[in-house]
Amino acid sequence: MAFEESNGAIIVTGKEDIRVAALLALAHGIVLELETGMKPTSRWNALAAARNHGVIPSDGSKPQKKKLLRLTVQAIRAAKPDWEPSEYLSKALAK
Image (tube, rainbow, N blue to C red; front, side, top):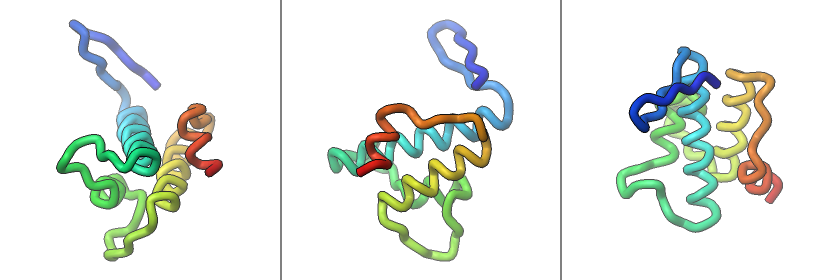
């Protein structure tokens, strides 16, 4: 991914990289919720975020968190084929 740093702020450049960065944040948020029960913020909803990023259809289906994580990882791999999940994501997928 193309990252730039400016005055302490991290900037993701490139249209594909922005989508991948958002999907990675979603995947890590889902893992946080799976492992601890905590949500990244009080107003964060994994299902709504997944629908907004096209991971699941907007037909009202509600997959379980584990399936949602798998679908998110598939979406990341579709956008960036050479991407490999971090150890943190790999452990959550293996459970």
